Image 1 (tube, rainbow, N blue to C red):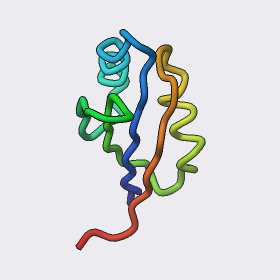
Image 2 (tube, rainbow, N blue to C red):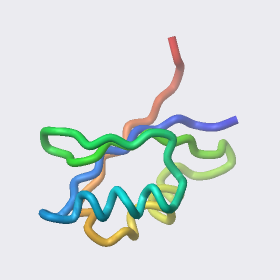
Image 3 (cartoon, rainbow, N blue to C red):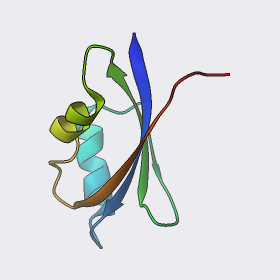
Length: 79
């Protein structure tokens, strides 16, 4: 079983496309979108049930150069 989470990512100016490419190469996402507003990217991913969500994101995403800030939204039940 997995946990579905959404991560909004704010990138340093001029780095959004490179950050997106780095995410794609890591193959950790289910979906990845460019967005308008306070954040540049929106990523949907599934984290294995036996993994800590914060540690997984920290270890697999937040070490990408160019990421300035992230906001993670946990999901609980699909309707």
